[in-house]
Length: 242
Ligand SMILES: NC(=O)c1ccc[n+]([C@@H]2O[C@H](COP(=O)([O-])OP(=O)(O)OC[C@H]3O[C@@H](n4cnc5c(N)ncnc54)[C@H](OP(=O)(O)O)[C@@H]3O)[C@@H](O)[C@H]2O)c1
Image 1 (tube, protein in one colour):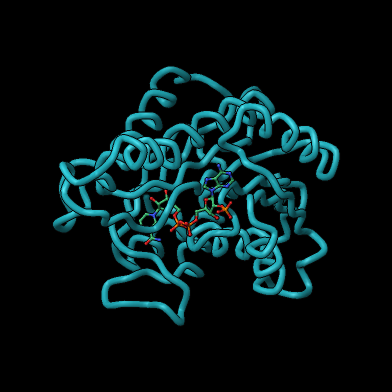
Image 2: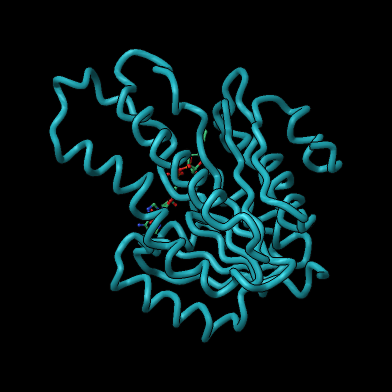
């Protein structure tokens, strides 16, 4: 499938990782739909992408973690963009360091699980059926790698959230081994930031976006899990050496 024939929904596309992916997909000629709960973030995204590609960007306000709202968003997506070919799910938050577990509330844990797992599930349940039977389609999950260890003191709930997301990605791969649409999972084992917020060891969200766009474009014949930590990992994805 040519990139100009692709219509990619990027959930979380106004966020740090998602915005790099949106820019790269647009630069490669795809049409891209982005949903956010925040109209300001959508406006910022419009000013961030390459100006000549802006005509291919469709932005919608909505909450894809709500079963009611996601149905409205789904209808609006199809009405505005036509038939979807791919989905990238980059929902979540960059970091959580609220402190020791015994100092936390149930509400805080619920909000972490809500953001990392429940919105991923609710949106997947709404959008996957639109592409599941289409050869050449992909559903890509962007996740963190904090699932099996404490990254730093006070980040325990980040580990819980990451573990939930990882387990969900694993079960959909295992439950749908032969589905036409292929799952990609990108496990990011380091920080990702825009060029003006880089820290030592971080990856640029622009480079991350290029790698994820290449993964979507490549139409793997099977479900795929790729782990990224270093610039060389991103280069390998772009060159197809994974
Ligand atoms: N940034 C990093 O350093 C880093 C490192 C490793 C892994 N990751 C992974 O990358 C993924 C994205 O992280 P990020 O850093 O890009 O986070 P982010 O900047 O907070 O972006 C997350 C996006 O998710 C969206 N979102 C969350 N719940 C939603 C809902 N119910 N409905 C609609 N949109 C919703 C938010 O949209 P709104 O505009 O509506 O708020 C936001 O734009 C996560 O899975 C994370 O584990 C990130």
